[in-house]
Length: 342
Image (tube, rainbow, N blue to C red):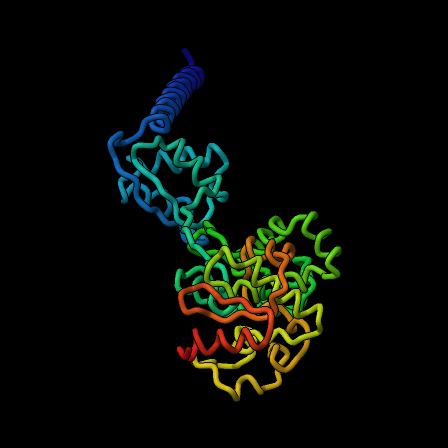
């Protein structure tokens, strides 16, 4: 056989061997990855928190998963993720993962962004500053940024709120957010919740009373701050409605306090004499806007006050109030419950 033909034959054999080895290795790798992605590395493992920082590469994520014993083979995980075209789709955040889940399940969680959520409850009657502080303490977003957005006219307009600020429109409820959540997302979620609660039927009712939504929320916020016993909300509402109808000043201490910068907790006579858009001892009608976030019961109380002839109420210092129809009755109640004089 000529040398050239022998060389070609040997080359062909070598090429076929290489191809066979390559194909065999490919099949072996495929079956290895297939087995890997279906099999949890530790069926008895507990859940742990796994974090992905913004901008982390697939290689680093895979290595960290192996280091934390969530998967057994970072190389196989990385190859599987690339096969799924998931390399640049893994979302930053905190995840609850476990080696008891298969790598396929783990990748699915990371792809869907099923991040760990943190519970936060915003009580009824909190104002913007208190709410902003609560989110900053939980490392969700900056208090300063939160407050700025709540007074940003453009942002407020985007949310469909007709107000100078979002005071009163951050609905008090229990929420679940990832640890690192934008202030915009938090505020938008809370305002959306308010808009769900304030139903079309409520809007119709507001119109029947001669109020717009902003006025209802403002009145509801005052009721919220004045109420100690939840059952009194409709009766407290009736007092304010009655005073508004008679063109009487509302004379609500919480509105005065809201208008005082750096209030120290002690309301004084000079505070009652200060002229601010919120001092209802000095101005007639409702204040400029809400003074806190009212809950659903206070909103309903503002829309559906109890029928009464009461024009005054005073705290009995046991979370309830003494209601009066005349100033004489009211003065006697003040002496009895506030001054402790018979």
